[in-house]
Amino acid sequence: MLSILQIMIRKGFWILLLVLVFWGGVQAQEPSFSRLPEDMVVSNVAATAMYQDKKGFLWVGTWNGLYRYDGYNLKKFKLTITSPDEIKGEKIIALYEDREGYLWAGTENTGLYRLDRTTEQFKVYQHDPKSKKSLPDNKVASIFQDDQGKIWVGTLKGLASLNADHSFTRLENSEISNIEITCTIRGRDGSYWFGSTYGVFRGILTPNGRFSITRMEVVPAGTPSNFAPAHNHIYDIKEDPRKDNIFWIGSRNGLKRFDFASNQIQHIQATPGGLSNNLITSIVFPSGQNDGGFFIGTDYGLNYYLPDQGVFKSYFHVPKQAGSLHASTVLSLCEDRVGQIWVGTNKGVGK
View 1: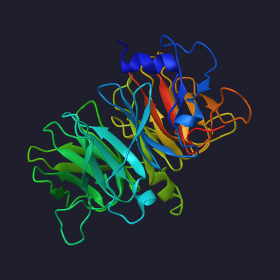
View 2: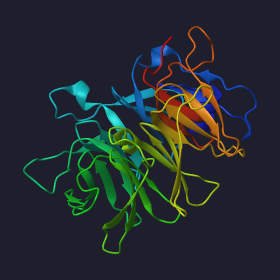
View 3: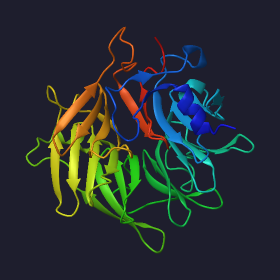
């Protein structure tokens, strides 16, 4: 029997996204983008979050709900909506699988959902303005599990941990207590890095299960105050897999290289022939590449950047050209276990 991954490779599949294929860890030719037949998906749907689980299924969060692809079929999982506006309720912006095998989905404005894949039922967590033990806010853009197995969520109004009784403990008296958390990564040294709409923060989880938070300065020196918010609006953070203490940060105003050891930051902004756009939505380091390069999704174009050479290669939608991106607005990136790079756009799949 073919595994899910083998099926995916053979079918050269699409869902609501695009696939960029590399062979043997080396870019064999100019990348070509492919997709599933359009009758398998809804066209013009934004693919805002992607995650491949332990079994090889690819999960796609969209502006129109949650989908799972098994190599043959695309299945939609209907969220349990308590909002009167069901379309509004199915806007997914974060996906995560915990160590117990539950799939978690964060939404734009209807809370947090935990999928039990045995029963295919959702447990719903939402903000209750009458309870400080509820989810801090119904916008959930970040989900992760710590070493003790505790689930944490980043919301529009700060960070909170989920308790065994399904209540939440909010991180209070901290610089990130009441700000929007947009992304979280775990550093190789055990620290946690939080992106937000107010900059970048590094957290150390203390023995009592709380975070000690330090702010990292990412705004260029001398920046006028009216431009600082764009530099501080962070969409993604990735640690460089080849170099210790180097973090790449995607912001609303360009790409940033942060050296934690020296506290030095380099700002890279869009230029003709360089980075295609300043709004950086996502970053992925392909595991099979040995050239040090990585992919950068932006509001206009997909970029492949070779930092040692300072060289960018950009890819866009070209009407009527086979193999080009289906749309130039890239919202999410994901590498699967066999090295395929998935690119989610604002238009999903279509002609």
